Image (cartoon, rainbow, N blue to C red; front, top):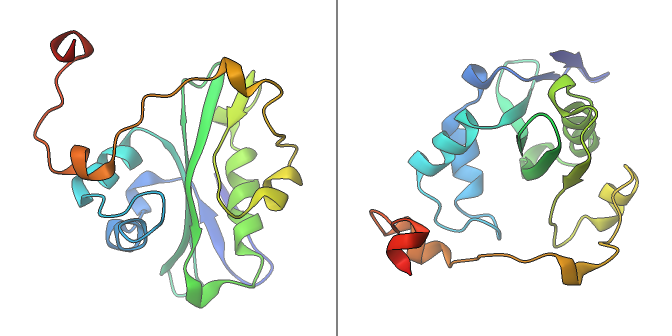
Amino acid sequence: MIREHPAGFVADDDASRVDLDVVHGFLRTAYWSPGVPRETVARAIANSVVVGVYAPDGAQVAFARATTDRATFAWIADVFVLPSHQGQGLGRFVVETLLDHPELQGLRRTMLATADAHELYRSYGFKDLADPSRFLVIQQSPASLYGAVSNGTAAERA
């Protein structure tokens, strides 16, 4: 899936085109993934529906991904536009392209979390959880995951 932006940028869902250095370089300092190892980012890309946005010279300038079963559920994650390219509508471009992806159509639920872009996502139909008390999470600090060789299975931790 390739989509063109009026300013000459191109969105592409080809995971082999993603510049791992650019994506890891941004994510390792992002508030949601501080210190994330390069190997973790590579694995996340390999196991997701991805959209990269590329400047006319071919350099990657934005990214978004969805973790999904491609049937009922998707989680939108790691959405960013490099600071040098913000203010050109590329955030909307990457989000729209990802949400329009054929693998994400007809899902019962698409979710995401954000600290600062609520209005952007509301413009695409995202809403606050109707009943947040139904949702639970297992959450661990990035430091405990990134430094560990293995957390073991749930049965091993019990």
